[in-house]
Length: 137
Image (cartoon, rainbow, N blue to C red; front, side):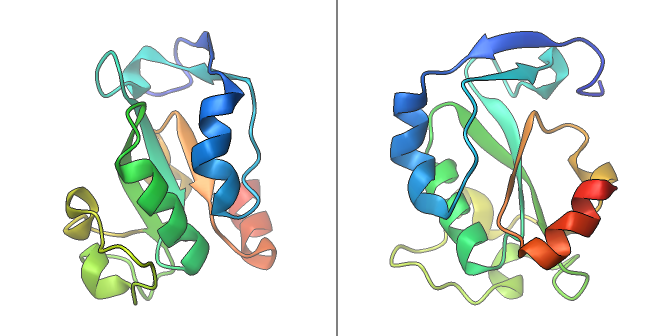
């Protein structure tokens, strides 16, 4: 099911998101956003993607999201150079903790909209020069 099909507005207390995401490098936080039933992993977790997953900001998003009770990372996006590789092969990990086991073997996708259609939220760790082009598409 496409996430644009049927939407339900869900409130998420910002106090919880701030603790996890504000440290991730300029994340824009919203108290309300749309989530479609097809974008839910189960009744507790929201499917999310990370753009720029192999960079330092993307790695921080992954570290914070991998153990978050509300989110499940389903898609990792990066440059064509990193696409189609297992995450551990595509990145030079710079975080103080190891790559989360649930992420380690995931295959990185190119940052194209069609790879993120099942995601209710997409977190971007992309440089502004690149993000504009991808955001437009």
